[in-house]
Length: 514
Image (cartoon, rainbow, N blue to C red; front, side, top):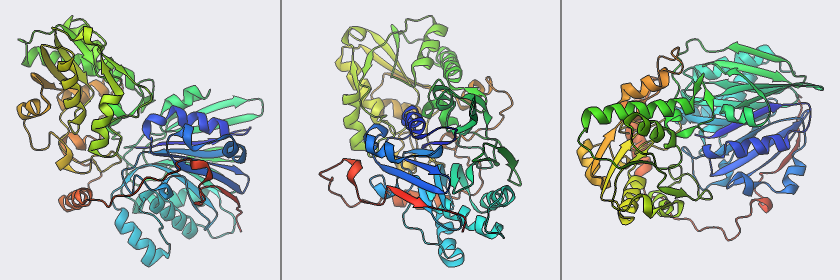
């Protein structure tokens, strides 16, 4: 999971991209980068950390041009602490390309070998995004018979990418001197939306991971990029689109609606806010069916992504809804922090219990999901320390029992609390007095109720079904072995200021079509 942006405008886009990345910061807090273009010349700055820490005034001054892309990174492939894997990525052949990618390729290793042995291209990092960029570059080179790139060769190259690449990917690419390309994998697993802004100087286009970036930047939401579709916006503002995949299945990632996306976003015609509210209604119905004897004094959300589910659950049960935790908004999202120790320490820094809401009460805590159990266990302990008599726990999503291979940090079943435990065992493990999970069919119904045209979802972390059809038990075992291998410790740098790094993350390149 990462956040990506791409824009072709009539005025400088550096501030626009910066503001857009701030809005998408929840999608990745490990690194950030922006690349802009002046015709055939690229400028880039990227580094580790939050958007506000990566960019300084002097960096922004150097990011000149009326078109560009941005990325905020949440690492699932590659190294979390490697600044060289911050995006965008750049190659200078065949035409000069910049790429930002959200997702995860399931055949990245094979593609990397093909790059070296057949395509004669060198991959410098462990990032599958660099692999994807080089696949596109190679396909573009094969498709081009002239020194100038054109729409036909670009669409042909993307069709080649779809044939070779497996997994989940939403992509924005700058082609030097030509324009912006955006495309989505044939299953539509990761989200990508298009916005338009009509100005006196001409029409501007913006593509982003979530509609919230479209809204806040003053653009009008047009639609989603369809699975397998590619859109092309040249530097004159001309907009073209084409279906480039031989076969498509619309199966958006369910975990986007459970946790990843902001509630004010609309993706694939589905309001995240409405979906989470309906999750609470279905959860209330299940509680009535399965645990009608529980005496509950208050429904309390674990902020923020479970708040809307908790509110509608309380309303459905005719029970008081109370805010029992205060969130420190200067601490990152716990789920997307690398490492169990970091997550455990962060929970206490991130949340503080309001004792008056717990003392002497039986409380039902509602969270969006239980992944590793670390956060749930700590929060239940906090509620007891605040004086709760009984602490019940509800998950707005089903048990997370299987690895995710499409861009979410769940690569090893050994890390997932529900993988090899029953609901009763999970309840004891997290220290709750009772536990209720959402049923998968109810979760699907909650999302489908907003947009009935979506009939299939990517739900592999809940049911072990991988929609791309290429994920084998051997592949999953290899992922787990790689994940479980102890990593060599690395010393923290003394100077974390990303501005003065001399690691090639600032570019001023004059790139043409030959």
